[in-house]
Image: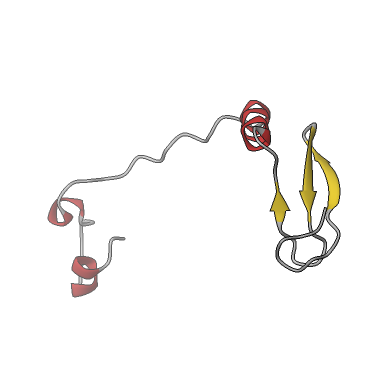
Length: 79
């Protein structure tokens, strides 16, 4: 099969048990029907769970200010 972009012969490769076609010249990837779904399913099973979200302080900036000296930069930037 020829690359639709530049006409180079496509190369077949195996990714997580799914054969995909890619162009070594332009690095384009072409999938047959259902192959993307298989890759997504298999990568979701293999990946570790996401890390817990960091807790963020949503209080008003005046309530968050550190005790002691403050500057106008504290109002502009979220330290």
